[in-house]
Length: 378
Ligand code: CA
Image (tube, rainbow, N blue to C red):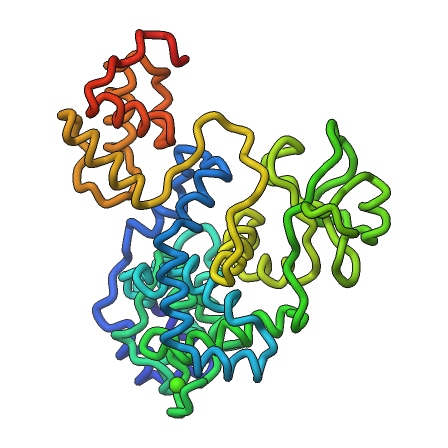
């Protein structure tokens, strides 16, 4: 703590700011645990997207677009970023402000700053947090977020906030927790600074020739004429459209949906460097605009479930006497165990996967139809 204090003073943080913010703060061991935890399951892309782009998130996003029409129009005018993309970031990042994280930033970041790994990263974020308080943008009490320090409607890191947050409601303060206009304006500014090109699409779904085994991947950018030469087609059979070079994304390999993506996809990608994440925002933005689901199905016989379907799955498991805890739509170890136990009882493969297959089986069971014979569905 003495070391952090010296560094803070060195960086222009006052003793008053530091002492008030760090008063009584003790290490949060769960932050260290979270740093060391590897996810137990690798989520298939179709499960990931089924949750992030479900009917509920689309309906709520459209309601938000109507509610914040004036703010979004102003953000479009000032930053040139499509309102559907701004709102899609909001929906994926924090479920429109419902999942912002409740851990005090100063505690999480000072814990990380005193750990053995990534100490410099956390120290920089802690210093940025103290600067936010000292500048009067936000109060200590409002600065709560994820264990890693992302906070607010748009889940900015404190250093990102310092670089890119804007006061979009004009009250003189930047506040991405208490002000939705500030959060939306800040997201638009982020994407603009990340190179967003006004009026251009992120990309679109395409059709591949049978047995395609050519180039793909976000870094293999080609002229559209090249892709056309390789047999890549627009879904409607029209010539490939768009400006500049494009990359071919095959998130589930050549037998799943395929996408040509332009530089605006990379702007979304820069928000949180994961292609599945960027695709969720990109697709949600299309759905908010009124587009339908992907035309090509995922290469699986057990597609993912929306949050509503996940809640239904849990309710049906509970109805059958399996313990799922609270039916909140979140699939934790308890729900996975319950799925496995049900699968065992129903003669299904015991993979614990919260997919369409186990939900359909539970529905049939509730209807009193004969349950498939053991082994027949494997
Ligand atoms: Ca403001």
